[in-house]
Amino acid sequence: MRPTLLVPLLLATSLATAQAAPTPDRAANCVAALKTRAEPLAQRVRQGDANAETQLLPIVTDSFAFIGSSYKQGIESAKATEMMKAAEARQAQLPPDELVKIQDGCQIEGKLLLAQASAFERMFVNHAARKRVDKLKRTN
Image 1 (cartoon, helix red, strand yellow):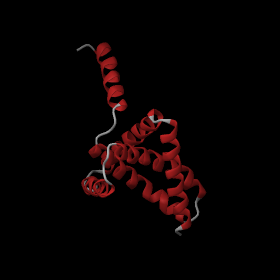
Image 2: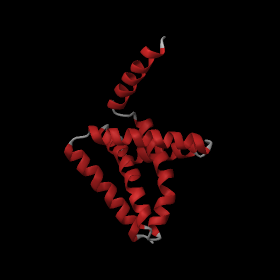
Image 3: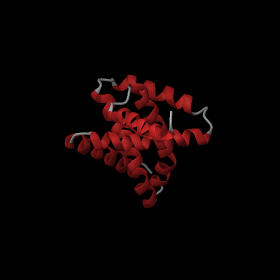
């Protein structure tokens, strides 16, 4: 296939994939990856670092977009937690650069999920993420 035809095809495929709700496994993988990315920042937030809070909030928000997607698909909390823990165990075996690629992709996808959500869903996700970060600040 000629490169000039390949680029539009890849773009169309990625847009179609991004518009579909992630599978529960994909959501669990992304929540786990973003949790790992958020942990060092969360520690800094607990220590009172306001700059870390600014960096942490978008990661938590992107993670909650995946959680909301799983919730809409009817995945029960206990099952979602089990899937996330399994994803964390798998990701712990990955080379750091591979994990960063997954985290970057999940953040992009989380932003797309949020952009495609209804106004109510966006409000709910943003509120849940803000509450989570505020809770971190109180648990020094």
